[in-house]
Image 1 (tube, helix red, strand yellow):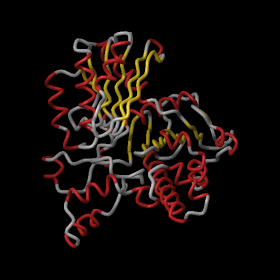
Image 2 (cartoon, rainbow, N blue to C red; image 1 turned 120 degrees about the vertical axis):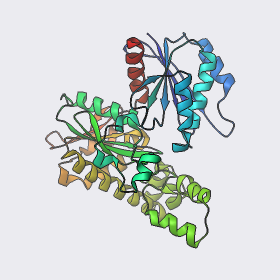
Image 3 (cartoon, helix red, strand yellow; image 1 turned 90 degrees about the vertical axis):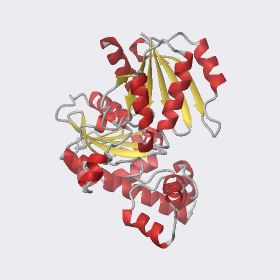
Length: 365
C-alpha cells in the first residue's frame, strides 16, 4: 500500500508518497505565497508518481465533532469548511490542498487527520475555560490544542527510544518552530497543552505573541480604538520574535544576540523564559517528568535553545550532555547517561503519523 501524505502549512505545501514500511517513494515541497498552490507543478508531480492507494490530509481543526481520523465524503467536507472560522489562517490552506489533490486523484480514498484530535480527550480541568456557560455550550469555546500529529508521533517515538511502554511514562513534548507548543503526555495521551481555542495561546512564536492578558486586547480596542482585524493581524503576524528582534528566524536572533544586539538578546530571553515556565507547567500537569522531547525546526536544530532551556530545568532532573547536544542530528539522546530525566531530540515526522492513521482507517473500511 502507498499513501500520499498532504501537509498544508501556513506558507508551504509538502507532499510525501510513502510505501510499505513507511519508506519515502516521492516528495514535493512547494512554497505557497499569495498566489496559492501551483496547480501545474502539483499536477506534474503527482502525474509522474505511482498512483497511491489512499491520500492522508493534515487538517488543522476538527472542532468537537472530529476527534479521530475520518474518510472524507461530501458531508465531512462541508463540515470541515464550516470549521474555518475556528482556524481562519490554516483551515483554508488545508482545504485548498484537498481540492487540488482530489481533482487529480478523484477515485482515491481521502482521509482527514486532525491536529486537534490528540488533545480532544484532555481532562475537563485542562480543556475548560472559566468563561460563561453559554460561550462554552453555544460557541464551542474550549481549549482545543494544536500540533497534535507532531506531539503524538514524538511521544510514541520517545517511548521507543527509551525502550519503555507508553503506559506509566510521563513525557513533555516541545514542538518548537515558527509555531510552537508544548504537550504533557501521560500513558500515551495528551493531558494538557499550551495552545488553546486558537494557535495564538501559549509560547512566544516567530510572529505570534503567545499568551497575553485578554484585558490588553480590550484596553487597546476601547482606549486606542483599534479594530478587531487590526489587533488580530498584530498578534498573529507582527508579534513574537518579529516584534522583539525584527526577525522571526531564531537562527538570526541567536546570531545577533551573540554579536551583542540587545533587542535580539531580549527576544531570546523572553522565548526561553516562556518555554521553561511552560515546561514546568506541563510537568506539573503530568505529575512529574520522565522524558523531555525537542522537535520542530527550532527544537531539532538549535543547540543554544535546548541548552538555555535545560540549564533552568535541573530541578526536574534534566541534565544535558553538552557534546551530544552540540552535534545532535536526527533522533538523538542528548541527556547525561545517569540523569533522572531522559532528554531527546526527535525529528518532526507528521507525515509518518498521517500515514499511520490513514493506513489504519483505510484497511478497516
